[in-house]
Image: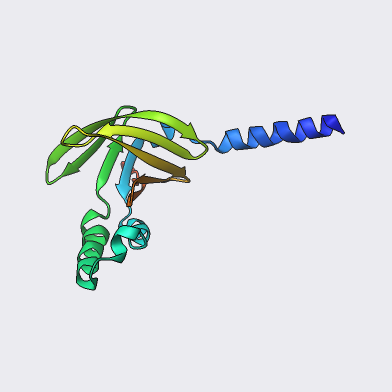
Length: 146
């Protein structure tokens, strides 16, 4: 019986290790998923006190203006490009716990902030307090051959 318990424990630890996130899971080309981001944001505590017209403005900005915005993540930077201007924000991985990667980086004012990144099949959910952005892997464009 003890051997069976040890085997079960070993299999369980292997199964959880197989699904654990890695820092490499963040690396790649991503695009903001406006609908998924809005679905998360609209239920946050910070949105509950806003008037309906303000919520509509935010929904429009998130689902139409932010949707599809590209973000490239390297091992050390998150790179955005808006209106022809590229911006690289350095970050570093602090911890990994299951499918959650904790990172930190400085904002424009130089204030260091922590965020959590939940990694699931082809999706990143970056959260900092009530603010969350959901990203999906950017589609790859095949180069036509003759």
